[in-house]
Length: 53
Image 1: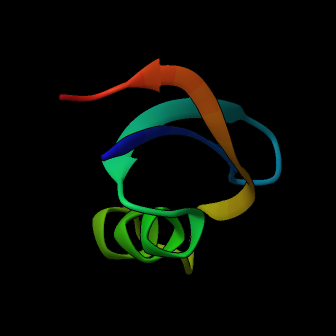
Image 2: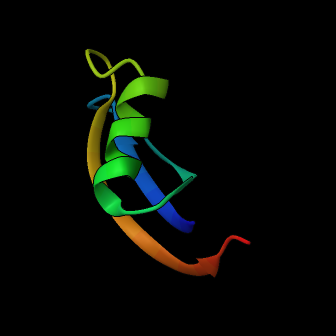
């Protein structure tokens, strides 16, 4: 598993979270599942240097 940083925005506010997934596509799908994408737009998905065991 890899660790990905997800940056989200609702138009006025931005925040980031960290999700563990095997690849960036899976991380994007997980973020879509966990956050209401009608309110929160996913701005970026980037891999961090941290590696989950």
